[in-house]
Image (cartoon, rainbow, N blue to C red):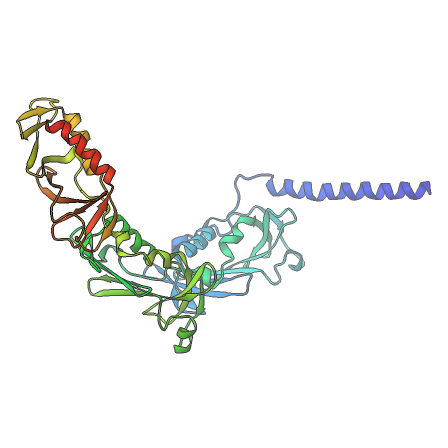
Length: 449
């Protein structure tokens, strides 16, 4: 019995020692030296690669060609390739290094998963007759490397395991995911129909304006942000490469819940959004293409916003630092202020009250009052000026700014506890914070006295 126990103990010790030697020495061999490593393809330059074939671990085989500096998928479909994904592969082919040579002349490739490689990369540079290949097999026992070999050499070597995500790409991974293609800098109109409501935008010089359902200024950043969301919408999956009429009905695209037209001069791109695919995605298509895809559902929420969400919320464009001339009328009283340029080196500007009684004023005090006016914002909008008090204005403001090159007028009306504002030529009115209006009037009284 004692001899049996001794034998078992010896076996356990030997097994532990063997495991230690195997894993520790393997790891030491993997990481023994990082200097002067040999490249897998020493003479390959990434930008010279013009043909590429990628066979993924999932079995997808994708052929790509570069034409005119751009990559195109040619098999199993014809589609524009995702340049960042393809360039990642070509860059890796030109720079990947051998971690360690495992076997110079292997008797069998089965031990390394290379008799039937999980991933295979074939490529040709311009003018080359034959494809060069990188075959990738299983991971090493430590998991930090991959067994690999070239098609024109017998030796098996290791490459870093993190490169697996670079090379192991399915066809969908390699195709361009951007759904809508149009030159953003040339977009001059945007037409959105969402859930039966229409909002139209048009470029007005360097600004955006809303032309439907109301004609008014649009918030530049909000409109540009919406265009960016539409243009950058990414395909999450492809559900039908060649959708027919039955497919369109199935995916809710025969009567889209959202239609977006992006106009750029004579060019137009149209995004159609249909029914719900799952909790996070919806069906969609580029009207110029037959494919039906899925995209993030959050885009529908952005496109379903009303015109008011894109209107300029600031009542004024001017700011205290660039105002030059201000006229404020309240009833039969008019206050007029002018900024006077300072004379001499390092002289500061000052404010002069021209009416009601001429006097020079403290610059900082006037700037503080004007800042309160300039910071007033619209809390909401109403379609009509009826019952807004604007027929008998409580206050009218005229401002010239940017050295007199720009001007704006705002009229305020008051009814009960509510305060409204309106611009000339714009329909409806803006409801603003009554407390801000009251506070401004109190501050104005201090510099009018």
